[in-house]
Image (cartoon, rainbow, N blue to C red):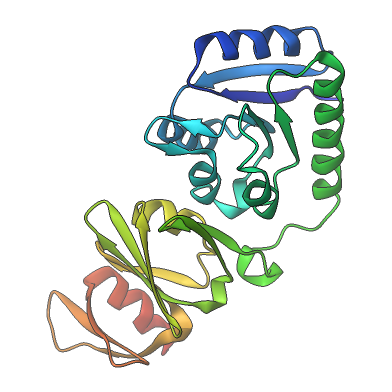
Length: 242
């Protein structure tokens, strides 16, 4: 059995050292790194693709729930919360974490979490891989003190707004801190297309492409929104028409 490639996320050095010490005594666990902030955790998860992440909830500049909401749907590891706070538990399990450890925990409780993680990864590996848009997996988005779970097919377009993104749906809009690049990584590329620097659009929401501009074109969406698009995208969409 291959070792569980494990990432530790906690802003307290002593907590990271204690957890690392417990994990090093367990067979079949390889610690590949440690992070102290949510932003560093997201970057490490995307770059290193760990099997398992031990995630604290109280992190500088955000919390563990925000980390979970920013992970690409198709590249999400098993997540075990390790925190001293009980008030995140309901939201954490709603975001489908594997286990929730309250500090301080002992070696037996840690082994239980490791076994749950192995069971989760084994069950996931036995399922055929399909894009989130086809499996009905919901995207967790943290906004205004709540977590909203969206189906990809509910999203019409996503717009960048400084250090926030705005998700447009038929039912309204959601605005939250994040980047368009991170959202693009979480969505199936055959369902969504980056039309310019500031907009990601559901292909099914595109009504027509106007090719009057030499430099690019104008996309008209089904709700009447008009967006400029790049010359390269105009060529890609033009190929669909034969």
